[in-house]
Length: 248
Image (spheres, rainbow, N blue to C red):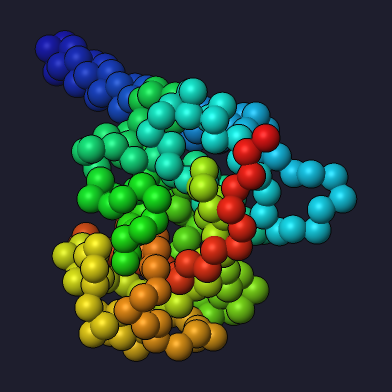
């Protein structure tokens, strides 16, 4: 009798543990996808509310209402756009690089975080190298699709991006993409020619550009990668101003 009672206790104990694991896993999955949906919905709302495409214009890029957008969050410095891609986000900047790792543009907590500029950079892209970070989300959100540039064929169809600022709209001609260590010399505001050349030598795509001169303004886009512990994947581009922003 005691043996049967002991087995029942063990059975119910195991059942309780399994139910606990199931409930916890279910909550984790629900929480993850809930955050993904919240992030996607907010970003779609921001695009609808603050970007302007004028009827009849053939331009690839669009205008951004920075005056209104900055009323929501004064940390907005720019807008990054890759045509035919989910990469279509405002760029924020804070005095602490960790701040926007888990915060959205409205200040709410979300593991997707935001796309943000290195705190060391001048917000007007006047530095030699402006560094912009974003999470590598499995859903493809934020910089999850940046790793598509590990394929040369993807680069051949997407060889440029656009960066809109309150002052100037830029075309970003892509120069190289590479898997690097988090302390790679390319993560400098003023990288050496050697660091840039090294990135080009090991690039995941064959660029149409030559090694830029010292006067060129660069942008480095950075996200996590998984080839080794703490790996990063970066895409570097060269800025070309297209037009000054016209304020009505």
